[in-house]
Image (cartoon, rainbow, N blue to C red; front, top):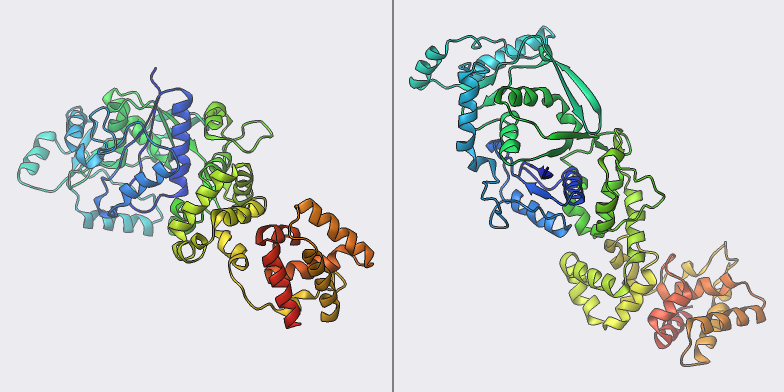
Length: 491
């Protein structure tokens, strides 16, 4: 059997973290089996479409390497299918005609006003809001006469009154439904566009889709699709209904929040590998202590049997931790290229007016010192401004109760010691610098922090920063002398 998965999003807004998760599972499952992952656009709800939403989706999927094997032209049209539902309308008609002719579907002439009144009445009576079957038994010949008279209509599925509907889900196992709880679903709308429950069955059949991953919220639609497939003698794909993503308060992540837009995470420059790895681990347990996988390793280890049923908490701190681990693992030259690209795209003023005015070697030294400390690239500007600019220090930052530095006179003594060390030679290795500092500190009966705290503050003008030796390594001996000398003048 040729394994084929598909992602079928609606181009109605930005690319949601949910969509990225589904795309990743589709991609991994298909590649694990060396077969096909397709992208189909479901745009039958024309009232909700957003201009450019689809091509934005294409850009994002390319950016994170989850590129489908089949998707709408001009990118790829390998099997000559229309991959956009609104271009497939002629393909649906023969199937809907078959359902009607065999009395498994029927024409409904109820106006929207009547249906709204019916729903309101049922709600007031605290009854389930379902269609009342008014048009269900209209003879087909009479219905066709009304259609020829240009009366507006929809087509509804004729759901059996008492029937148990059973299917086997790849994640949830055996699931049962009673047809008495299912409404006579509209299959064809009055604008002649198919509804989701109708189009998805036909599309998956014609495109030979074998496996579908979707959210557990769609589980309730399963019996309608099973009935459609049964009436058409169509074999459905195998389904895996996946748990939801919730926030730390156990509430479903809202589509209205930019916190769930993949683009926003790319703008903050979470590494793509880290973002994919984090998304994968939200519901998947590889039964190993490893938590950092490359994409090829994800493909090798992924198994749908290891997906759990519980909702997953989107913990931003876990994502930050995972991203920091990927930053540490990345080769410094590759990391610099990523940083340079990020700053040019998302921090253009800083990149043009500051970053690019310093030579690559200096910028590389800064990045190397930050590599084990930075969580994501949007922190870079705030963490490094003092390495690119001169400013006046807040002298109170030189004091530290914890380090037993209680006066500026004491801080001045420590800074003079540091300056004497830096003036003693024109060059040091970091190990030599550390050794000399510690030796001189002992000779003066001081503690390490009593010298290194004010030295670090004098070099960075920040209460918190990378260490004094790392700062000297980045700034260089001459720049470090100048900064400490400037602070001594201020004191």
